[in-house]
Length: 147
Length: 288
Image 1 (cartoon, each protein chain N blue to C red):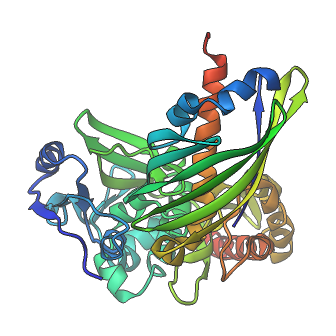
Image 2 (image 1 turned 180 degrees about the vertical axis):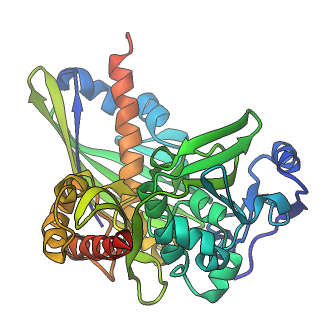
């Protein structure tokens, strides 16, 4: 499954970057995030409860912010599994200066397996997009908040 | 697979259902069960309790009163498909209800359950949007009515709160228009790969106004306003429908659902075909 999206922020990359790599901010914006604990090397152990309609599941995994080039780009590597299935994904986040603000481009791919992939395949990309939209909407609100 | 253990409660009224939901956080309302039970069996949903609202009698049935066609939330699809009132006032809805799943689904599945679940591949959401239906809801904070266009917010996401229940769907009765639903069903599941509902008001051989809503290939139904504008004022001919239907690409947005059976590109290419078919069928009824 391929995922691409673009988000626009009113703050420049130098102001957005610290939020994107701050585990407290990421944890507060990641939908259903119950825990995000550092395990070294820019890696975190994550526990998420993700739910859409009646389908809710608890997933445990690791999130790694690799190849960091502040404030331009990093590679997000996610692995996780839960009762309903597993996910292995990787995405590149690129921050581009855009008229005083930032255009953030996300391009990635994810492998999803297990029950959720067998029966929910047609819904997965839309569900992923919905979570991504919620994450970046939340981040956008954080950039607007007084620091 | 067997579902995980859950407690079962039967509600005698909507008030009772609300009270039970309060007492059992995380519970799910059970109506016909034709979306929820499969999720339970796959253990994709593991609610601690089910609150069965299926026997609340005053939530079922089709009536016409005060210029409104009213369909109770617990009315099964088969009853909607067979109703002469629905055929008269909202033919597209009868079309769609008769094409949902298989006979077992149509006899047990309910209108309220279908729209509360809001599967993107469901038939009814697009039809209700095209017909400008309103959706009656009851919850702890009281009764409210939401237009269909504001009810379906995204994939399996609606304006319905956790403790709220859909009570009915209402559509203006006695409108001088024809409506129809055209569907590309998935050959195995009968879910809509593409589903298009069209409503046409005729002025002689011309189209006075049109409403078109598309579902199946988008996370939530969209009104095809470019198609609606393109067809309004034009002759009611298949040539003008085919031309107007080409505009649907501009209405769909950039998020098209694809799967192993039908890719994003294929669905995008097929959408105008079903838009044109629904317009043609609606026009045939509008002329009568």
